[in-house]
Length: 385
Image (cartoon, rainbow, N blue to C red):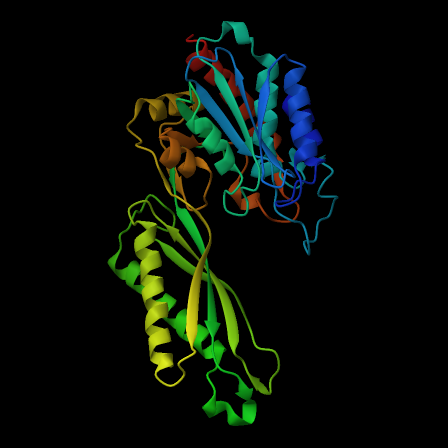
């Protein structure tokens, strides 16, 4: 078994579900690096229960390549696993466990690479970034980004190791999560015509959101390099009402927008705000207290790296790829690119199709390919060989 596979077993054992503490895992990472005489810096959450970690291997006065990954995983609640999700198990050439694909497999390969590097030989540095709470909207990495904003020698470019089957990804969609709260007027259900049903307001919102989606499908913009080549809108949850014999006075719906880079997110959000305002205005003609409030819950930008730039060409050559791709799922790459101006690609072991599911796994061949990729990356870019 390779060293990266051994490390992955250790990492899976930390149940770093988003919004739970990741400090035990961060302590493991710090100790691993310290044993190799590599200093690291923490960027903690406001409550101190989670933290980002950042380290630089090699010269600290040069801009280098940053390898980035998140430490958190999605919950296993109500999922039916055939093995303990937080104990890595092996069968049929795969390693099973929560986070093996998304994305502790890449973190393990990062650490295994560290063990092979001789820092004094590096011409340019390797930066390591480990974040928290990515799965709930790329929340934690923003504190790390603020720290890097003031760095004397920030990273020159970045590889985010989300599962891409080791394909080089140059673009992904952005995402904004919204919460719409619809306020009506309650009454006994026998007097329903004298009340304003908040669920009906939410239903009108849903109908309008579907019309916005239909317009985007028909009119674009489109980018056929994505498997779904247009911006998507999706209502995920609806909650309202207390009893059948009460006309509900409140209903909440949660929705998301995933935008392609060619369609600015704010324009779509503004369409949703305008929709809410129109429905509210119509309701207030008979019920002055009617209201629909729209709250932005989480948001991260799309990634859109120029595939013609030298960095992309070099990464494709190192990965043994003649092509590049675009994906619908999001990463922290858009924030590194938009907030810090760091050209970023996504390239990591495993398949996103395995992520967030019971019996999540990563193929050992994928880990081996990532080990080779990172070794070649250090040799060609950081050592200049």
